[in-house]
Amino acid sequence: MEKYVIFGGNRLCGTVRIGGGKNSVLTILPACLLSKGVCTIYDVPKLSDVNVMQEVLECLGAKVERSGSTMVVDVSNVSTVELPDRLTRMMRASNLVMGPILSRFHHVKLAYPGGCSIGSRPMDQHLRGLKLLGAQIVEKHGYIEAKADRLVGNEICLDFPSVGATENLMMAATLAEGVTTIRNTAREPEIVDLQNFLNSMGAKVRGAGTDVIKIEGVKELTSAEHTIIPDRIEAGTFMVIAAATGGDILIKNVIPEHVEAVISKLKEAGVEITEDSEGIRVRGKERTRGVDYKTMPFPGFPTDMQAQLMVLMAISEGTSIVTETIFENRFKHVDEFRRMGADIKVEGRVAIIKGVKNLSGAYVETSDLRAGAALVTAGLVAEGATVVDNIHLIDRGYDSFDQKLRNLGAQILRVNGIKERR
Image (cartoon, one colour):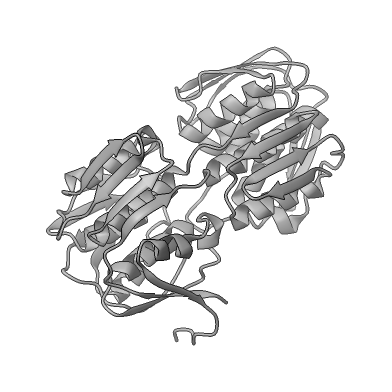
């Protein structure tokens, strides 16, 4: 299994371009299933999750061609409405085919989806919403099967602003009869991106970015072209890397409004951040201040940045308190940070961090995608060599991560064959 070997201590400087958003493209690609034509998607990142989603579409009968960062998706010959277990258990986002397939083909069957082990992510809001649109749903032996002769618009109020449920129900409602109103929706930028794509195909969706979305059903959707928004989590990760290494990095292809919560906390910690027409420039300090932060749905501080910012807090002056409100099992990286000399105590969903002057290189293991990015960040600032295992999880969300870091001056290698920790 491949690993990263990192020799820390370098001050990272230079320019990095952020790729298309992982969480956006994994919603836009399933949305192509609603079209009766060909969709062309630009700025698609090279990620293992995107490869899985491509295979999902191809298993359903779609023809997918990829050239560089462009994907052309032809769904005119889609006929299968059932996904194999192997694919659905590999990736959580596989459940996003439910809404489009059910809406267009009136029948869908798939196994409960998998993904990173970061906590419970139930399907109940997805299924309750689909039932309100008229679907008959059977859950049996680990499978979900939904049928509907025709979905009909309705009023839906989510118990929690779930991103996945908001997206699935938006897509399902585009071809439903009448008007659907979804309340207490998630407000993430990826949902606005989905709305823009759906409307470019001829859908009538409005309200994305607020907590109420209205969808007026149409009879069919057509071909469209769309450029994926920049990945705000990749951007936030490089911002923290610049701060943690005392570096100076210009981050291009980033929408500042999408990373405001991260910018705010970095500035509070004493990091210098400037914005101009080229992008966001982050200049680290010799030592930052500890700050408290709590993960919240957008526009609050993103749970997907919790682990990365914790690295900076681990080497900042003073004490920081981190509260994780989204997932109950998202502090697995703390034990690995401790191996590197961090002083962190976890009490339930709260982590108390006492800043230390230095981290030390160690053999550490990635538990999930964002924890992996955080461990790489820790390795970049640690004294000596750090080996990061299970980096296939990092490949799920970061395109050419090691190459981008080397371009900034990092000493990082991707290798095979290093003896595992006992």
